[in-house]
Image 1 (tube, protein in one colour):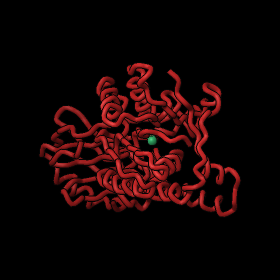
Image 2 (image 1 turned 90 degrees about the horizontal axis):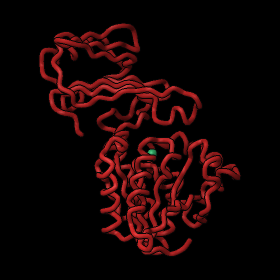
Image 3 (image 1 turned 135 degrees about the vertical axis):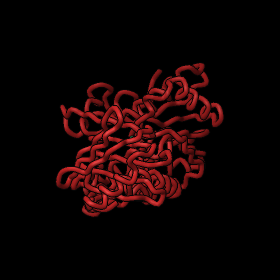
Image 4 (image 1 turned 180 degrees about the vertical axis):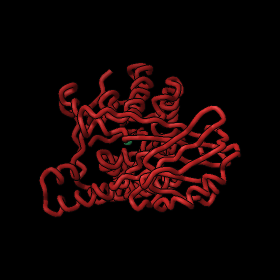
Length: 116
Length: 221
Ligand SMILES: [Zn+2]
């Protein structure tokens, strides 16, 4: 993954619009957050291989970026995206990595299902 | 350490074995005791990708699979089972399916000792769920047929709840193998091991104790 180049990422997101695509979306503080910092309120969410068809996708904000996908009757968004790549399977992988190299958020778009 | 008929180690993540059990595994293998390690997931949801990143969400499992195999090689372990579950979902699997997964391994291998996590005191939900399935599978066996169960517990309230470990293994004969297992999981341990190696080089007493001894709680039914 490389640091986000906004125009390139925008055109990649455009290229998946109007197609049935598989989504991976995840936010996390890690399972040890409350172990290392007592009282830490640990929250996160994970969804994988949900099929959607978005009509409009946008990269917003300065780095870290926000990504929003407008669905026929709903929304998907992720904030904190720093890195991206189009992998060898043609999947658009986006992630928000902290300065410590730990993933905090991830949004991925693919025309084929992600593995399990 | 006593000789065992067969030792079955069950953890959910590649690297769960490395920190506190790899010396025990390597020692049993040197003693000629067969050891099986069933690792439930490939740590797919690991957060450490580096910055700049060395992996992404989709390539991390393959990296960790190779690391797990390298750790097994370092310990001399030949019976490594990857059970195909997904990281962070173990507690959401059907409870009976999880008990059966453990029961099937017990039936096949007839272990005299199982090593896993102490349910409720192992911090990560996957650790606790794994420990719960192991405890329940053994509990359902007739008392005379039950293997011993050694557990790892590291919740901050562990000592308050169950006191101190009662099983202590001298693994000073296999320190190179233990360090090999730790270093095999480089994607997860490289920062910890840089610090650990410095402390070992400085002959820090706690670090040496960690390297040469391993501790377990016998689970009683
Ligand atoms: Zn673990």
